[in-house]
Length: 258
Image (cartoon, rainbow, N blue to C red):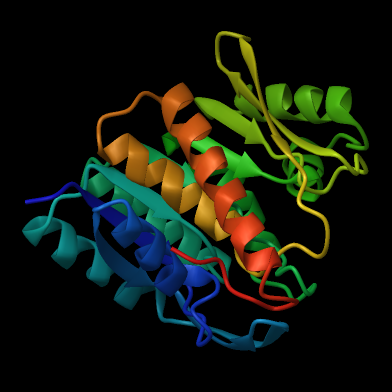
C-alpha cells in the first residue's frame, strides 16, 4: 500500500485548486490521496463565484470514517469555509490523533472571494495552528495571522516568527507575492528560531490557478513518504516551479500539470 495523505478542503469544478487538485498532485508522487470535503464552490480557473460550506458534523464524519479505514501518514488542510467547520476539523484531528498536518490557510481565493469567515480565522489561530507541522502562508496571510505588516522579506520572517509563537511548529513564509521580478524566495521558520531559505527563479507572467494548494499538498506528500520537513519543502518548491514553468507555456488560465 502506498503512503496515504488525507486532503481536507473545498471542491473546485475546474480541478485547478481544492481537494481535486490536491489528489492530482498526490497521485503524481505515487501517494494514495483520500479526501474530506468542507465546502462546495462554484468556480473555474478565472475565479470563485460562490462558496457553500457543508454541515460541520458531516465534515467531521467524513474524517472519522475514512481515517479509521485508511490511516493517513500526513494531512493537508485547505479551505474550510467557516468557523463551525474549522472547529469540527480541529476536533476530528485531535480525536483521531493525526500528525504531520500541513495547513494552507485559505482565507481569500486568488480572485478575492472569501473562503473563510472571521470566526474561522480565530479557530485557525487558537485550535489548528498548534496542531500543525507547518503553516504555508503568503504575505497577506502572514499579516492576517500575525497582526504585523508584511511588505518585504524581513517583515515576512518577523510575521512567521510571531505565528510560530502562537503554537505552530513551523511556518513557511511564501514569497510568491513579493515584488522581486526575478526570484521567488520562501522562508521556513521553526520553533527553535532557525530560518531556512528556499529560492527559485520567478516564471514570467500571471501565476497559474491553484499554486498554494499544489505546494501544500506536495509538501504533505513528501512528508508522508518519509522526508523531513526541510527536504519536503525543498522538493515541493522545486516540483511546483517545474509545473508553473510548464503551465506558462500553455497561456493564461492553464492548470498546473502533473
